[in-house]
Every structure is written in structure tokens, then in C-alpha cells.
Length: 413
Image (cartoon, rainbow, N blue to C red; front, top):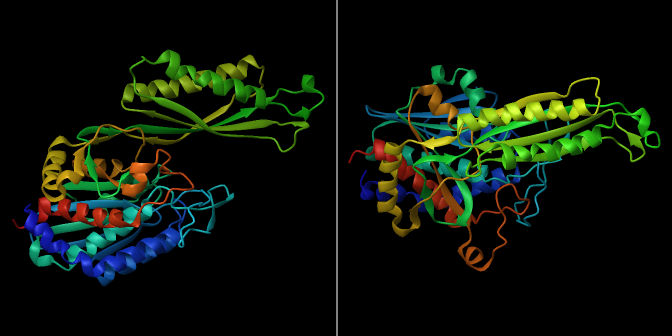
């Protein structure tokens, strides 16, 4: 790729910037929970058709793929995630979400784009529109994939299970990007192992309910749950080697409806993070062993239910693909590009290139206003109710990074 090619394609950004910002504001104000992104998917499909893409809809519930064929050459796939989170927005933005939605159990929650998926979607739409309007500058096939349910861990696998590999051309390489709270305008790549794997477990402890004044008649699942939470912490602190990068977090506990009633059951939900298959397997085996043992020690009459609902692989960037794109980013972005190290968040994106058997690269872009980044240590992170990416230059950077990466394979130069 030559920088001049990218600059030529990106000349069109000035003319569509306000539209791309409009896509973002609309998405941010109308977030949808995972696997329920109906309005978002409809907007994406409508715009892609207007720009001349072939559109395949409804893959894995609400997944959308736009295909733009432009002569012989490589096929490049780029992915953006579309789903939001059950978080009440507290950003104070004029386009802040006031939306509520229901999860798979029918529980209603406030909904917010607290992880930047609206940036990812708007940025990929902007890049797709520029590529469609500058076909004389590239050749090959461009596929833009908009994925549901990344936060659930089921979206990418759902698209694959719904026949993704049979419904679109096989790519030669797959690309994705994500916003993180470092300085807006910066772009970073980590060659090799980057993001951790994630497992999510639902645990139900079965006790025996009774009056709060008669604990001797009960088997208290709340006490069992409390003991279980503490015991689970020993997996990282005592079972894994001290240098092993791993974490276990119990993020949800639910039991009972009144302070004077001992409940029948208690529910826990926990997540693990690790970077290799051995640690991931150790986590699962130890979780099941500890949950069962603590419950058995309390005299339960029914074993706890331990259900694994998410199991994603680590993100391991292909070294060759990383090197090619890093060189292009360094040339285009200059000092705003840097190499970075591994991080603890997790992603299900690798399921897609794995299904096609192709290499991939997943990079990150900054989204924090420079003045805030320089002056504050209290910067809201992804999943925070105050998470509010700086609209610019974050969106421009997302569009630029995608176009530059596309042209590494598709550029005529």
C-alpha cells in the first residue's frame, strides 16, 4: 500500500464526516442488547445497499454482511460489533440513551453503548462508503461484517453456526478494531497474543428455605454462596503459578426477596480471563470442584448447577498480518501509531477467521479527549456509565485505520 493511495481515498472523508457522525449519534441514542439489534441491523443494511453492496441479512439472528466486488484480487473481511450493554447512561451527552430493553430472561434494563460498539459500527460504515466511492483506487472484494452479540460471547459463533462460511465469499484475511480509553487519535497494534480468553458461568446453589428466625430449619444458600465466593478466589491466589496472567471475578449474586426469609436458592455469575488452554481448563475444573465441595460441606440435598454460558478463545494476532498493517499505520499515522502489549479484555471475533481458516488482526484506537487524558487520572473506561468517547478525532481515526488496512491488500499500488 502507498500512503498516497490511502490519502486519495480518504479525501472523501471531509464530505461524509457529518454523515458518519450522524450514524454514530443515532446508534448511540438507540442502543440494542445482544442478539436483538434489529433497528441497528436495518440501518446498516439500508446504507450498504445505497452504496452498491450486496447485502446478506439475518445471519445468526441480526448479523449483516455487505459484499463489494471490484474485479479480481484478494478478499478482505472487516468486522464491527453492534450490541450494547444493560447499563444506565450517565454521560450527560445531548444524544445520551434513554432506552430500556429486556434480556433473555425477560428482565428489563436500561441500555447504553458503554463499550464503543457504536463507534465501531459507524467507523466501518464510513470506511465502506469511502471504498465504494473510490473503486478506481483498489481491486478485489471487500466484505464488511456487522456482528450481533459480542458482549454475550455468542454472536460470532452464532453467525458461523448459521452458515456464514457458505453465505459469503471466503476472505484471505480478517480485520477488526476496538476503542479503548487512551488518547483519541492514536492507534495501537499488539503482534501475537493480545486479549485473554473468557469464560462465563451461571451457578445456582440449591438450599432449603425457612423463616429468618429459624435457621436450624434451613440450608442457607446465601451463606453457601458467600463461602463459595471466597473459596473461588484461591484458584488464582493458590492454584496458579504467581506469574500466570489470569483473573476470576464474581460479578453477580442474587438471592431472596426479604430480609426475614431464608431463600431456597442463590445465583452467582462469574467470569474468568486467561491466555492459554491449560489455564482455561484448570479454571473450569476448579470452579466445578469448589462449588460442589462447599455446597456438600453445607449439607445440600441437591448439587449446584454450574452452566458455562460463554467460552471465547484468546485473541492472537497473526505476526505477518500485524507486520504489514503496522508498517502501513506507521507510515500513515506517524507518531500516533505505536505497538502495545497484551490486555485483559476478551473478544469472540476470532471465531469468524477461525471458521474460514484465515489469519487476522485486531487493533485498538484511542477515544479519550487529549486534554482529559493529560489532566485526569479518573478516566471512565469501557462498560462505565460515564463512558463517552470523544467524537473526534476518534471517528475519523476509525475510518482512516480501516481504509489504510483495506488497501494493504486491495490497493492497486
